[in-house]
Amino acid sequence: MINSELVRRKLSRLNMYLDKLKPIADSTFNEYVSDFYKKTSAERLIQLIVEWASDINTHVVLESGERPPEDYTSSFLKAAEVGLIDQELANKLKGSGGMRNIIVHEYMDIDDRKVYGTLSIAFSDYKEYIRQVDDFLDKLEK
Image (cartoon, rainbow, N blue to C red; front, side, top):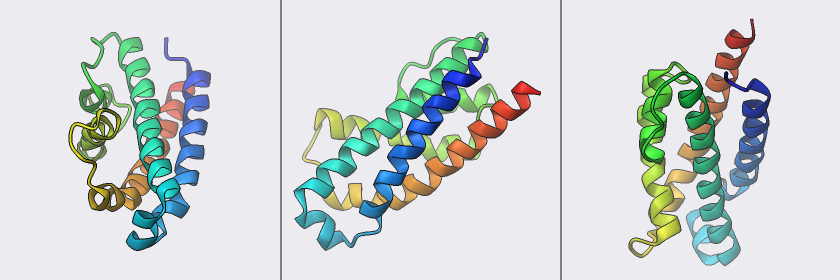
């Protein structure tokens, strides 16, 4: 059974992380790249945003009777399969799992320009994610 209260708590936390990311996303690239704290905060916030969304996806997928997602990327695709979010949004968000892995595991030198370039996109796409998950829960609770 999908635990709406749990998902809504996670959405609230996700929203808080996005609100903390917004001022960093609104800074210029030069401000971003020259400020160690902005860079590391942005990287950590991206990590947390992806992880919390993936937790929501996994909970809903499992409680829908499906097999668990294999990774962060597939969690968004499986979330679309069970109707949590639409396919268009899943396709937009699936790449954020890879960005999270690059940041966390430092597979290569982190490209500041690439991370900075994703900030405003991540902000708007994850705000849409919150809206769609909230709509899903509203329908579920009726």
